[in-house]
Image (cartoon, rainbow, N blue to C red):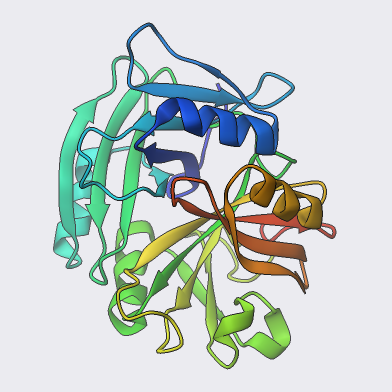
Length: 273
């Protein structure tokens, strides 16, 4: 079982109205295959080499958002839940056992972005990352960095490294002029070499109804080809491929409305020399 450090992103899943359509889209885009027990409202996703990389889940309620979610590893989910509440966040779902796989809780930060907490049992999380067809990065997009930054420092012990667009290229093309913060885990020297995620800012350039959210990134071998495949499969290209210091990225939307990003790495990713 792959081990994850406390506070590291360890799992991603997407909530969809049509699970079978989701299998067709992501199978066609990333080459994933799927497995689920008979009648189960979810499907584990496997990369071409058989590594577990994500899951697709059928929404229990049509009013739920169609979105990708990220989960952070914790050695004690109840202690993490208490830390969320103490730091000004809220708990959406109290800790619940996911069979013998682990224990999960859902939380929301002071700016309204939802994330998961995962205490591993039999399953630590995804079995591969930073390779084509697997998770490689996540960042929270918020309108309230002054509330969100101390929250994640208190809950996960993240140290922030503030980068501007000119030096980092980490923010999207539509956020020019807005700073970006990289997160490094407690006990590490803050900076790109140790970063495991980040925080960006939603500005007035975005629609007023856009909520705070986590954006999940997947590594790909060819960013431009992935953007074209997204269109072919019925999805949308929200931000056309563009270059950043860590490679070439695009922001995409699947055919049911879930937003995600892809990155074609140009060398080592943040936190992965």
